[in-house]
Length: 145
Image (cartoon, rainbow, N blue to C red):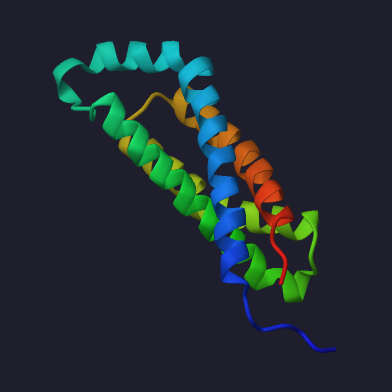
């Protein structure tokens, strides 16, 4: 069986950017709507101990994070496609890998440090699993060799 060895970088970028838009949008819903009250209560309780960026800077950083995650996820999908075959199952394998490395490990760190309330960390962990899966399903659908 001949397995293509070249990754279509243009399609990785296109699919990854689309995945990034999905990630950014879903994170906005989770953090801005679902968890807003919890974040506001935590922020009030922390007072002068935290120094958040301006809202504009925060949005740019979160968008950048979403695009990096989306592009990396679609690149991983493209890289494992020859072994796992193209399709949604492989996109979900890539999504779980991205989620474990980018979200689960960070959540473990946040739990260990006690930086955020457990409710927020757990909600973000669950929400990010769903959003990463949906984003990579969308981004991988655009990928072609």
